[in-house]
Image (cartoon, rainbow, N blue to C red):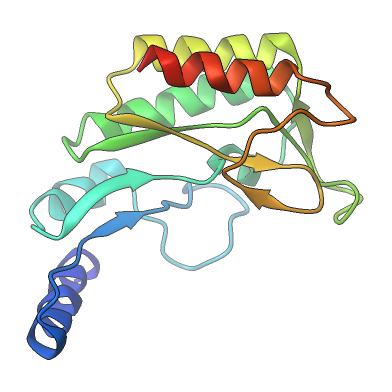
Length: 170
């Protein structure tokens, strides 16, 4: 029902506007503190989503933040397993990368990780070893989120340089 609803919406929009649309999903990880009741999994939902012509890709916004841990090795391993499982569904998977996460300015008790060479290297390895169909850059500095990578007062140019390098790789 969940998967088929996307094609029904796309068909309705096409009928009403003449515009053919598709969907890229930001999947919330199961067994996490992510909001929402339904969290699609590659094992239970992937095959159904793959069958929907309007399904363009899976592209998540830093899904690891919902695990509630700050240990970078645990997060990289989890991110690799999560990404690989979605890649194996055959739905195009756009690998999200982030220089790190630190939202303590807004959420004082939130997790904090990355913004260092080991985190960036771990994500570079994900890009090099997984068969994703692209890369998206997600950033959070405690005030804003988005897809811009610029040198900052907190981290200098390291994250900016890394972002330029990984986009040259693909």
